[in-house]
Image 1 (cartoon, one colour):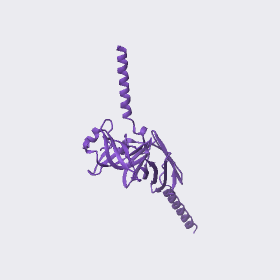
Image 2: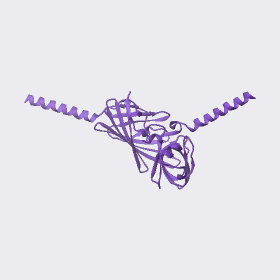
Image 3: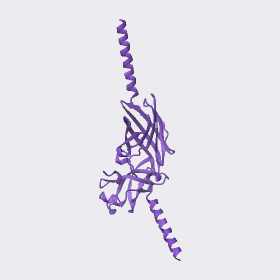
Length: 161
Length: 129
């Protein structure tokens, strides 16, 4: 009887650990630099189709992920997302309001956000969806921009510094 | 007299070089990568010059007011390689995808534009496969 109790306890402990690991998903923490050679051609050069940060600073805990994206001569965009998908305010440059949410989906991180700003053509709203995946020291970010009923998707690859 | 001539020649050279550099500025210095925008309007004028063609487009706002936008595009050579001619432009309806200028003026850097009637999209040279 005692052996059975012990075996069940061990099985429950192992199961709980497996569930915990699955919930934790991939750790994206680190400093990541854009690898232009491995990224879509449409995001490099003088006129990108979709703007990606040149560098990402990522800090991840069991409940949150903090992301700061920087690019040359561009204002940084940063956010601390709850990993349970709660909507949060993104710290966007002056004149831009942005909300977003992040959720771990298996080994991937999915971030959706809505950005709004004014322009001489009136108010502009842009929706973004980012799917992050990590393989070793390589981070791949697939980003979809939807605006005025039109969507385009591009891919960026980052190397861990 | 000769010294003055040399001085004038050098000054003119510096002025021309400065003008060329200003025309060929970088994207990040002038445009805001955080502000993508899509515009639809009618082409009213064309600046078919190097290093960038400039297209002037009348865009109607939600309140009905028409604003003329300046759209910086790829150079004429790149556009011609994609089959576009100067005479294809004026009066055409166009959809422009690009980024707003940092200074808040109705100026945009186009990553692509589509002539609506011809259903043809023209892209920046760096995105051409």
